[in-house]
Length: 480
Image (tube, rainbow, N blue to C red; front, side, top):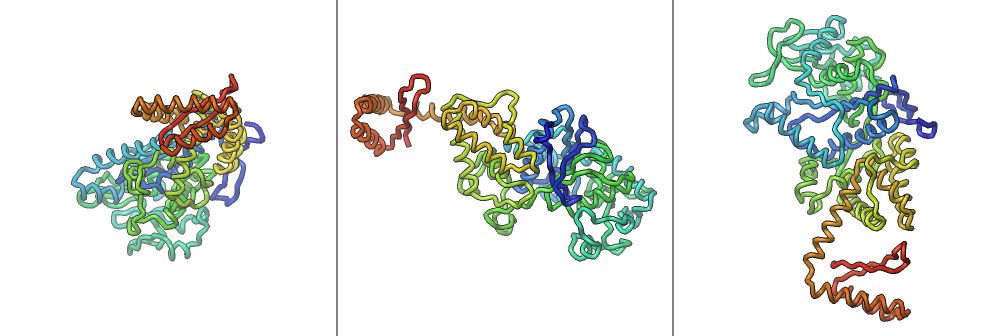
C-alpha cells in the first residue's frame, strides 16, 4: 500500500482518527454485529451493513482478498424471537430460518456482499458457557438465582469505550432492575429459560436449563472465528453502550487481554424525513417495503438507489433518509447510465476504483469525497473521455453498484418502448428527422427548429449527438 493510500479510521475507543495498522497484514480481521432475526430489517439496520460492506471491499483492495476475514453474526436466540414465534404459532427455528433468508435477500438487493463468516448464536452455546465459567473462576462473574451475572465493579476501567461513569450508567442505561444483583450495573451472562423457550444445559453447576444473555454471544463468536484480539469491530452507534461496552468487559476479563479489538467503529443514527424512525410516527420502513411496496413516496425503489442514498453521507454522521434523496439517487443513476450507453462502457470483470476515489475512501470512509471524485470523472466523460467513463464504471462497481445491469435494463426498456410504437408513427418521425437533418446541412435552422418543436408538441423528443468517428450529427428519439 502506497503512502498516499494509508488507511485512516476513527476509533471510538481512542476518540481519534488514526492510521490503521493491522495486527497481521496477512490476516486482517473485522467483526460486525449482525441482525436479530425476528422480522424484516428496517432501513436503519441496513446502514451498518452497507457501510461495513464498503470497508470490507476497501480492506480487500489494500491487503488482498485472501488476507481479509469479515465476520458478521446472526442472533437467533432472543426474547423478541421467542415472542414473535409464539405470536405467529410457529417454531423458533422456522421463524429464524425465514427471517434470516429475508435479511440475506434484502441486503443482496442493496449490493452488499456476504461476509466471509456468518456465525449463528445457537451454534456457539458451548463457547459462551466456557467464557462464563472462566469469568466466574476469575471473580468477574457470580451465580445467583439460576442466573450468572457479570460483576461490573470488578473491572477497573469499565466504561472506557462509551466514556460513561458508573453513576451515568446507572442513571441513563437500559439497566434491568433485579434484587439479586450485587451492583445495579451488573448484567446477565446466562439466565433460566422460561416455559416453552429454547434452553440448554446451564454452566456453573446450575441445574435448571437456561440460555445466554445477548452480550456474551458476540464475545464467543468473535473469539472463536477471529481470535481473542482482532483488528476492527463495527456496528451502529446505538450499540456502543451497553452492548459493545459489555462485550469488551466479558472478553478482556475472560481472556486477560488489554483490548478486544484494536479499532472500534460506529456509524451514525438514521432518521426518516427529519424525524426519528418509529412505528408510532408511521415512518418506520423496512428494506423489503422500500423494494417491494409503494408505501414510501408512492413508488417502489431500486436497491441501488437505497445504497446510493445511504452512502451519500459519511458513515459517522447522522443521516436523513428522504424521498427527495431517493429521487435524486435514481436520477443520478439514470444520468450515469445514459453516459455509459453513449460511450459503450461497462465495468471490467475485476473493477478497480480510480485513485481519487480510493483517496476519499481511505480518509475514514469519506464516501462524499469518493462520490465527488466520481462526479468529476462523469464531467470528463461527457466531454468524450472514454477512459474517464471506464474509471467511473469501475469505481461504481467497486462500491457495490452494477453499471452493466443499468445499461442492460435501460436498453431493454427502450427496445420495448420502440416495439410498442405504431409503425406509421415511427415512419413519420424518421421522415421528419431526415428532413430536419437536411435543413441543418443547408443551414436552415429555422426549419430545423420548427420540425423539432412540432414533434415535441406531440410528446416526441429528439436527441442529437455527434458520431465521434464520422463527425456527423445523429438523432435519436423517444416518446415522453
